[in-house]
Structures are given as structure tokens and as C-alpha cells.
Length: 298
Image 1 (cartoon, rainbow, N blue to C red):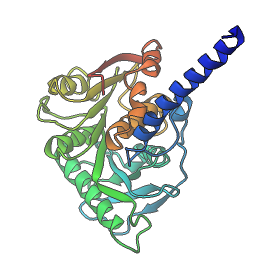
Image 2 (cartoon, one colour):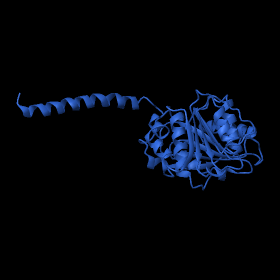
Image 3 (cartoon, helix red, strand yellow):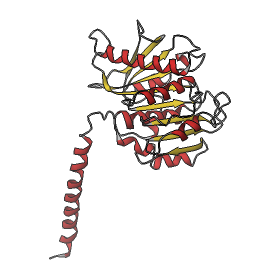
């Protein structure tokens, strides 16, 4: 065989092997009906908006809670997951509103809500959070609603700040069918949430004097079952409002919040590297985090 024939044949064999390898990967990607959007990058996830356009609407007649604003993607086909975000003690939805556009532009229907009283305690905030989710599902079944047909009732998640974070933990504990929970700077007068079965990302603020992490966020995380998909993210030098609207940590916190919801509500493993892989390791080497714990892989 002439020497100049060896390389082309080897190249042809390599090309054949590569094409054979690509087929199953492509097929695997198509087996997840919940996957939405392009392959994620760090830059995309740290941006204030995702790949989808979104709109918002006020809830005209809130059922079981004070008030609500629904954010929803306008250029996503089929139904998507829904997330309810509840504020903390004496706060209104303006304090957590930034999560609405952030998550909606990544392909979720989101309701940010006001509780009936700003002094409502965590248990009441949980009840109102779940009521808001139920109404979002009901609106998705109402032809006159702008979110008609947009919500998958089997893929729901909860988020909340401070006492709303405590309420989020209650919602996760009492509603195991939820797909994900993200309490940030959570406050609750019990430290035991061992009954939580919902994948939970706890976002903590290192210098939180309202809900000191040793008695709240860290204790909650430590009480979780060892088998739970969980993570604990602590913002370096963060105050109690480190995850609120207008904070300087939105790029980092938004990335982890979106990645967590994507991974567990959409079952989209393209986001796993941002929670466990190389992009996540880069964050650990930065000064933005004072501590991070996890139960990888997931």
C-alpha cells in the first residue's frame, strides 16, 4: 500500500467513529422534552436576561395571597415550569422582583407576590406561596389568560427571602412533589428541616445579622438528609439583603439560581457543570464566595 494512502484511510476511520459517536448524543438530547434554549455559558447565565423574550401581567384577583405579578416567556413553545417567589418580613415583591425577568427569560413562568400582611410569619408565607402557584396553574388553564397553556402543573418550584425563605423551606417540606426550592437568607425559628425531599439550594449571606447563618441558613442546610440533592452558597461579606433586587451579587446568584431551577425543574443536565463542574470550580477560586457546600454529582 502506498504510504500516502494510510493517512486518508485513518482520517476516514476517525470521521466514521466521530459520526457514530455523535448520533447517540444527539438522540439523547432529544429525549428530554423539557430542555429549552441554547447550550448555556457562564456569560449567558451571569447576564441579567436569558435567551427568551418575556412579558408580565398583574394578577387581577389574587386568590389566597395579597398581590402578584406574573412574568412569562413569549417565544417558547409548549408548557414550562412555574416558580413562586415570596418576600420577607415587612417587605414587598419589589425586594425580590428581579427574579421574575431573570427566570422568565430563561423559559419559566414566574410569579412574584405580596403577602396579605407584610408581618405574616413563615407558615403563612408558605401557604400564600402555594396558593399563588395553584392560581398560576389555574390561569394556565383559562383561555382568556395571557399564560394559557404555558404552565406544566407537574413542574413547580419555590423561592423566597428571609421569612419568605423560611416559608419556602416549609413549602418544600410539606409539598414533596415540588421540583426545586431556593431559599435565600432564610429565617425560621426551627432549625430542623430534615423532612425536605425537594432539591434545595440555600443562598446565605456571610454577615447576615438579621438571620445569622449559624442559627438559620447553615443550620437548615445541616439538617437536610444526606441523600438530598442540595447546595449551600454563601456570599462573601454579604448582608441580609445580599440576594435582593439591586444587590451587587446578581450575576453570581442569578447564575446559580437559574442553573438550579433548570437542572431540577427542567431536568436539564447541561446546567450541572455550573453547579458541580469546571465553571463551578472557577467560582470557588474567586473571592465572591465565602463558603460552598454541595452533594454533587447531580
